[in-house]
Structure formats: C-alpha cells, structure tokens
Length: 533
Image 1 (cartoon, helix red, strand yellow):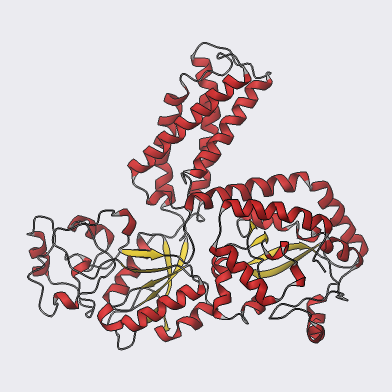
Image 2: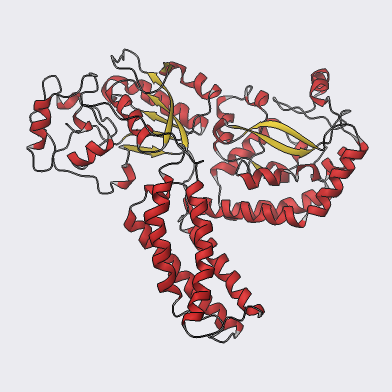
C-alpha cells in the first residue's frame, strides 16, 4: 500500500498491487519520488494531509486498498476518562500519604488537625499542578506514552516538594505524615493506571469535536476516514470545490459546495474546518475559506505538505499527527485555559455552597410573589454555535416571550438585542434581583457543567445570532461567561456595536490576569447595581 502522500487526489481508485510492492522495496517503506505512477506528476501531487513516517504507520492510520472496519459505538461521554483518572489519582495521593506513614513504622493520628491540613494541601497541589501541566486534558491519550510518564514524574516531584515545605512551615513532626515512601508508592500506581487503563478507556469515548471537510477528492475522503477512526472527531459533512468530483461516496453527507460555506457555518455548529483542497487547482477557493474562518473566529486546518518525500521527516511528528497544520484566530494558551477551567469548577462549586441560603431565599420569594416556575430556562448559543439551556431566576411574567413581540417598537438597545429600562414584563421581586444581578446566580450551574465560564462574552439567544454580521459571530469562538468587559463598562448604557467591539477586545487580549481584573471590577458593579435595568 502506498502512503497517503502518494495517492493521486484526482482519482478515487485505490493504488495497484505493483505500486504497493514497489513501496515496500524501499528502505523506509516509501515509493521512490523519482518514479511516480502514471498520471501522478510531482507538481500535481497535493498533500492528502495524512503524511506517515513509514509504511507501517500508514497502514495503521488508513487503508486505501481494503475498506475500514466499522468503528465500535462509543460508550462514554467526551472527557469521561480524564475525569475518572483525576478522581482516582486524588484517592491515590491520600492513600500514598497514609500508607507511607505506616510503612515507616508510625501510627496514624487522624485526630490531629495538621494531618488533615497536609492531606488537603496534597490534594490541592495535585489538582493545581496537574491542571497546569494539562495532565488531565480531554485529549491526553493523544500524547506519547513517554510524555505522559515525564509529566507524571514532574507532578509527583512538585507535590512532594510542596508537602515537604508545608510540613516544615507548620512545624509538624516528620512522623505525623512521612514522605520518604510517598514518591515510590504514588508514581508507579499513577503511571500504571494511566498507561494500562485510562488511555484505553479514552479511546472508547464519543467524538470530542464536530468538523467540516472542504474537498471530496481522495485527500478529503481519506481525511474523513482517518478523523472518524483515529482522532475521535465526528465529520458532520463535506463541501466540494468547483470542478471536483468523486466516484466514491465520502464517509459523511455532502452538504453543498465551498460557496455555501458561510451559510453552513451560520446554521450548523462546527468546531473546526479541514480545508482538503489542491493548492494548484483550488487556491482561490481555499484562500476565501481561510478568510471566512478567520472572520468567524473558527479554527481551521490546512494540509501540512505539498510535496512528496523520500526520506525527509518532519522535526515534530506530533504537531502534525493528522497531516494538517492547525490555526486559531486568538492566542493558543492551553495551560492558562486549563487553569481557567479549574478556577471555573472550584469557584462555581464554592459559590453555590456559600450562597445557598441566599439562593433558597430568592427561590421562595420568586415562587410566592408571582405565578410560574422558580427558574427561567432559555436556549442560548455557546461555544462555536452549540446551544445549551441557560438558567436564571425568573424575573418576568410567565408569558414574557409572547409579550416581547408587542414591545419590539419600544426597544432601547441598538442591534438585535432587546432592552428596556422600564420593561413592563418584569415582576416586583424581579426588578430587585435584576438590578443586583442575583437572577444570574443559577448560571453557576452552567459554569459547573462546562457550558459557560465565569468570565466571557454573554451568551446570546439564537434569534439574535441570526441577525449577526459575520465579524460579530467571532464572539462565539470562546466559551460564554457570567461577566465580561461589557458588564463593567456600563452594560445597558452602551450601544450594541460598542458591546460587540468590547467582546472582540476581550477575545483578542485574553489572559488569566485580565480575567482576574474583570472579576475584581465586577464585584463593585454588582453591589451598586450600576448600569442595570
């Protein structure tokens, strides 16, 4: 079987047996670049996006000669293995500390406060360091096994040092929580479970992302097969380039042509666009697709190679594991994003616990002062256009959505957003909880679920998104949040256009430091109720 880099994308026919034999005769398993098969000149060979390092790697990634076996149905939700792995490792940290103490011949003094403090420090340190290292990223199984072992080694070492320093500062005797056997107990147990159990479990999860592929030739078709089987991504459809045809049906529905890309992106949630075209034949359409993805703030991927290679190999195979170069329209900071998600989980859970008396009081007030449910559940548009149900305390009458159509002429906000300072639909208690943003507190549940973040552009409703200009849809390129620059800049006192530009400013200059500053600025705004209606 010839590597994908030598498959003629203008033909849907599989390579011949003789071509396969010729490839196997080469030292590195690749067909000689100077003797291409008939009809496949070097200048006409676009990259299929799947460049193997050897014949064996190619056979594992895709099969051109024989059809691929049907993938087994996924049994677990995306991220299940990473979450379970984290929970088990936290238990292992506590167990390793206690067992280490007993193995050193000391008794466990669980009645002492400093023991529980050290156990808590160990757990928190493990969570923070693991998050910073992206050890529990949902795509952790894509890493090399040696990389996983290196990260686990760093994690165990840092947590051990943190525990040692904490014990030293507290002045706790070494026999209370012994650390001598902690690393040799923890490291092998964490590493063994990661390599033997959780990496395999991750492969049984449902697809993480939904992608759209431009191109129905051999390159696009093979890319779709590879993504469906190896990279845990669901291909929702294909768009074909002009003058492009395929005698073999692609592994997902044909949604139209590349000219329909903007319409598709406006109507179908897409996490990433793979542009599997021929640069010699489709360069103008590929460039237009890139510009459109940039305008929408949507990640996209371009083929890594436009040449056929004999012995040359990429310096970093992992960076192009699927044969594509991946691009984003904002800075890629995976470690900061992981810490942001950890902060979202911890802060939302802590806030729900601490504010539970207030939440119960408001719920009772809403229930006994007006007819209808306690919570208002509304469909909103989240990351990359995916919808979810946002929760709020109900602050309006039950038929508020029906009355909205009658009040459209009294809208005081520009653009597709509806805002009224003296909205007649708002109830008595609703006006109070809206002024101080108390009605937004149930959205902490959305944050805990991962549908929202503490800081991010406010999630719009679908009818508003339908009226967005293309550049305004870029605000959907990040996870929506409870607060953003708009909330601390006057809220309803600024125009819709200014609101959109503030959201773009947040996206283009995002950092954890800016998030913390926005949270600190939000507190006085909420307490004074400034800018609210």
